[in-house]
Image (cartoon, rainbow, N blue to C red; front, side, top):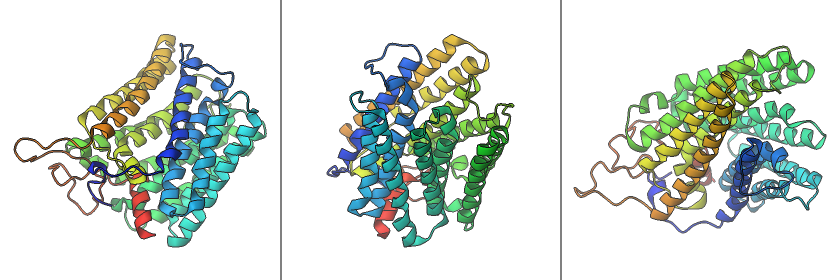
Length: 415
């Protein structure tokens, strides 16, 4: 992948069309968040509050990951997955369409998403791709359970597994610092998570403890080997990406610990533990990782210019601040005002990040400085960035190359 992939203007790809439903799911999910917080929201529909979680996890994140994988596959049928997931997400909030129809379309998208990994795996037989296939299967299981009438809080362990294992496995794909045996290690972690989910079906309390232990072990392994611990001392895009990733690991570790300390009821389904665990993983970990790699994910998939700018720090800092207010003051100390304000700040952080990304894409690469542009930070791994990693692990992602973006471009090149 070109080191300056985020800083080169290219003609936007038609894949941008597939991003529209994902964007709508994101905005609808944030709108639903405001309603659940008891705050005014731009749009109100009957089904928004009850579909909030599936909109953000499957409708938005699922579509985004499926589009990245379809890009790597480079086959027309691969786009059935992001197409169905995106359509299902939009129909979740369309009151005229029966909810069961939207659920089935979402499940069909999850099934296509799972199947999409099979030809990818046959190309390379990587353990990382096998883990991602397993993770997509967890998303499919959650969709099927939802159709069967299982309440959303009971689906969350499956969605946690989908998100965490997908991100972890994609990170392993290109992060050379994890060592030659990283594929086997991530596969062991994945089967441990799967075992915890199965235990949870028989005994909710033991399942929660097992899942917490499995996720905490995975987090510790990732942090121990992650180059972000070193690149956090760099500057520019390198430091920004590392900070977002390390922040994400902190929230994942917190959620894993809370699961490990679960009470007799098992998986948290009541406040404040439910809110703390859910948003630590789905906001703190997931969205922080997306923020970290947006300047490589979207250019690789959509052929757009999305250069890093220092202003990206603002929504990232706001996101983590919102979670401290919500989880520590709101959930931990029982302050209702902090719960509401933390949630509102979280919504503001994601909207601000979206606006920042769009603005940076429209503005294009920053102009060179007066002295020939020396030291100019053009984006991840740009030649003019003196803070670039400059090591064998650099693949255009100064934080160790996560994932989605790098694997999309690299997978396409290998094809």
